[in-house]
Image (cartoon, rainbow, N blue to C red):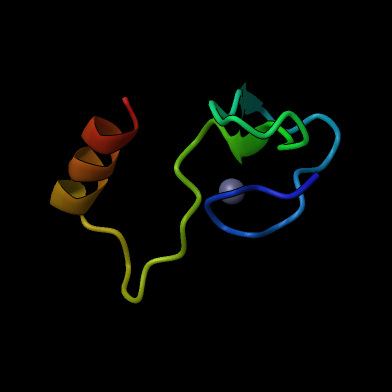
Length: 58
Ligand SMILES: [Zn+2]
């Protein structure tokens, strides 16, 4: 399983969620992503950035 946000493997035991893809094609697989924000950032995460990410992911 690959996370749709960070393109990294979601390992067994890691928390993730499954997002059904609403499309006309029945062959489209569900999207999986880590439940925690996991996208790499170019610089250390500051508090404001973290809060913004939480809002976006909420
Ligand atoms: Zn991820």
